[in-house]
Length: 76
Image (tube, rainbow, N blue to C red; front, side, top):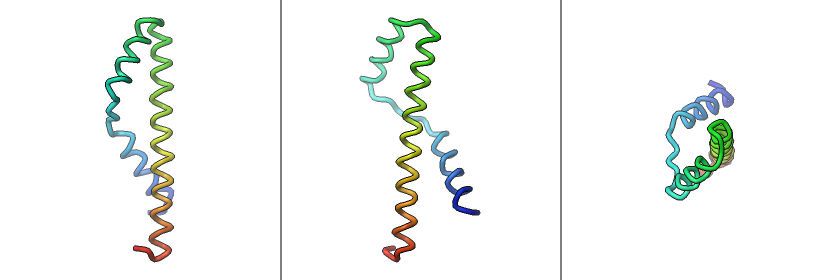
């Protein structure tokens, strides 16, 4: 398995995990939901979740690559 396939596998595993949201976020989303149409709410919610997932992937990728560099450098 090459590095790209391994990273894709890890991304897919992360995507299947449920991301617990803090209570304040849930309350904020309830407030927004009461102020906009259902479609607008779905668009807002989708954008927020896409941003969260993108951030997690970038953080994962950085950590994953850092781990490879450390291992290749002989630190572990």
